[in-house]
Image (cartoon, rainbow, N blue to C red; front, side, top):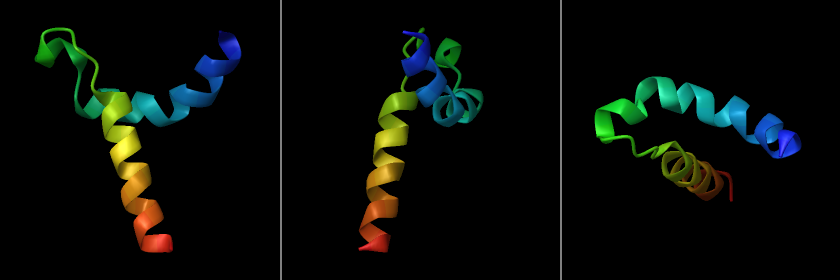
Amino acid sequence: MRVLYGITEPVLAPLRRLVPPEKLAGMDVSPLIAIFLIQVIQHFLY
């Protein structure tokens, strides 16, 4: 579990600061935002 946390936290932590889960009734949408941003970046690179 620590390995997964170590890999994902550098990406998700800044997104959690922008959209704190407390503002969305405790729902953490940072993984969804990260996936969306990765897809947008991939689209522009290829």
